[in-house]
Length: 295
Image (cartoon, rainbow, N blue to C red; front, side):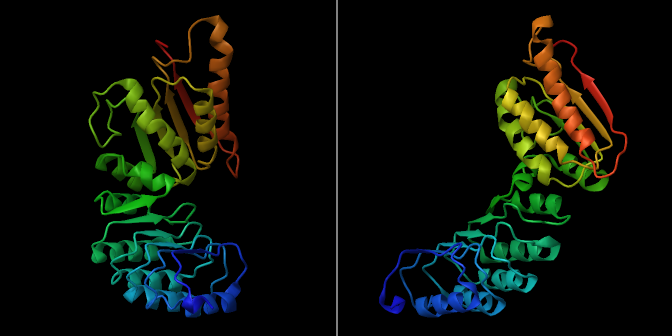
């Protein structure tokens, strides 16, 4: 019946179609000839290798599909390569979600190369994807602006200067000056501490759990005033399980002055530092420095 229905959107995620059900849907829709389907979602479904190849073949000539969601679809390495090859010829697909896939280095660069060759501006959702050791290299590539990527670590790394990316790639070290007067920013400061803090702090907290494992982390956190932000930072630091040296500079922050605010300040510092120091898989010493002069 689907062959005669002109659909604009079809969302079948989490329907347990498995290979046979997915095959029937792809065959019925006949993507090459269907001129109306703009959005297709097969997320969380067991698609199967043969069906991914069929879908990839359809994408080569399809001129209607704009959004394709294959998040958490248990894609194999060959599946992702097949999709990447199809993307080289497709000119209309604008959004592709591969969230939750184990992509790795080879497949990530295959996707990037395909998107470059196609010359089409696209949004690629890689949320929750295991990118191996390719974070920094991909961040450099995505900064060209042709492809917009959704992935906390990549979004954050795209904001950093090349010098900072090099230190991260070569030495597992990162130094960030949140107020815009340090090396960490790709753009110059001057718009004010609060504005720069707002631009960078939340992306940093989201990125920390998915960044490459760090040995050294230096954060100059001027202008902090949020308890929620402190908790987000603590959660992110706790995921950096190979951290050997952590430096937090909290000078001229908004944590408050005087004895009456000593407890909240101590709670912020304690939650952040202990999260980083206690969540390591094997016990080891973390060197911690905290600077609060002038706060």
